[in-house]
Length: 172
Image (cartoon, one colour):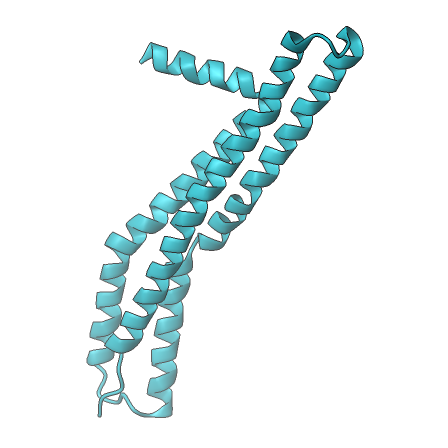
């Protein structure tokens, strides 16, 4: 365990301060993704069951008022389903931008070394190059994983909304 933490510390030092921000961003993004997945798999089922039982207990399901109640119920559950998905999508978009910022800060370090030591000292420039490439890679990995997860969540929300609309059918 100690070796694992030391490896993470070394990786973070190699990537610079921007890598810490990217790591925190990815951590928060995945917490939100897991929260949405748990909501879909656990808590939404109970809310859907309550909505369907409320709808089936109604005597009038075809009037204008009943249709408005149905639409309201579907809209409320859809809003709960969507929850933090826009925030997740924003965090996904931020990942590559922070990676780009890491690239810029790393290249600034490379240019500083070149100005001080000259362009012939490749060993001294290696630190800046790693600070330029590692945050870019981390930002892209975070963005790709977030894109896949948010796409899955969006697909599940769309499917659940369709199932909810089907469950709250108009019966006479």
